[in-house]
Length: 96
Image 1: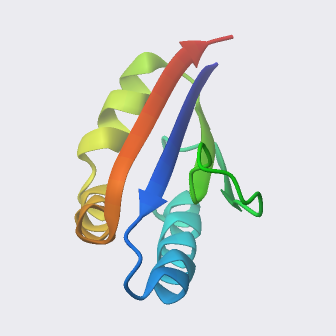
Image 2 (image 1 turned 180 degrees about the vertical axis):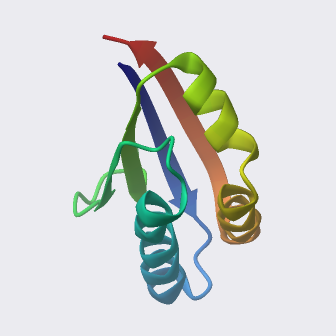
């Protein structure tokens, strides 16, 4: 199984509403992309300079499924939104 984790730091303008919209759009991907086996999206509650605002934990059967997800048109629509409302992101992918 492949695990894909991404963390996002959002811009301050319209931060709360942008986070809500991204959460909604990310969660919808599970029904739209067959390669995506599961996704957990979490909003940070810790007030720390090191903290990111949102994280996602998703799973795939294979590396090829992750690669297909990465270029899927529905995923790319969400990526476009995320890029427009975030300052930075970090990712880690690993196999278990």
